[in-house]
Length: 287
Image (cartoon, rainbow, N blue to C red):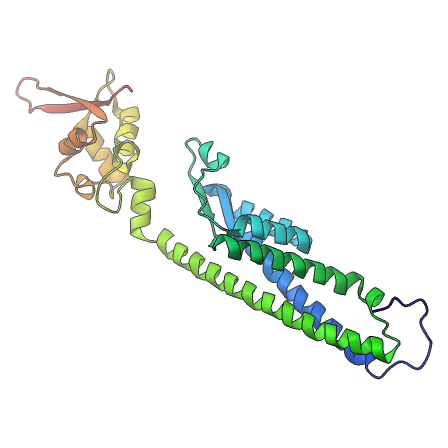
């Protein structure tokens, strides 16, 4: 390969237009790769308060659009591709406090050798992209027949390399789309709602401190407490009209009194005035 110092004004080789077309084909395929890369990077993970997820997603998409291919590849290999499970808790999740916090991450796990080889191959693709986009005519004399022939062979090999990367990236994107669809089905399921909002686990056990029914009983306390105690009958009536889906049966209990005992979140006392039935009162335990 030789560097060109002058560009003749005539006698352009017949092969030059073919080289130009093949160069364009490579660059178009690279743009397709880069667009797909931006999608994977933008949608590969999401984390934040539930009420801000839409805004956060839009910001991530806009941010990805501004990144160079080299930066995007770095984000892909450091976040989406992994050689071992990611088990650590992120700092943002740990600091969520009492907000409803949502977080997910798509990752493609692969053996260490495959991971390292993939990183090298993608880095080589970035180098190839830079050569084609910025330095192509520095390496090939397109005003000579031999230079065009060399360029033609190089572009054929380059397109095969780029196309393989595109097909691989498409497979990764398809797998990510399928995972997102499955996750959407899960989020919309009753089982997910039971766990997230009511503390009812898949095996039927209950996370009582954060359960929906205990939250309702505590809310009733703020409305009907008398000298620190709330009459269970008043709480039941209010919860029945305000949160009708919150019933003891849903939590595996036979009655509201059973719920108070089973949850171990409340103190209970009884009182009885003349000619009146026994009244049950409760109050939250002080931790």
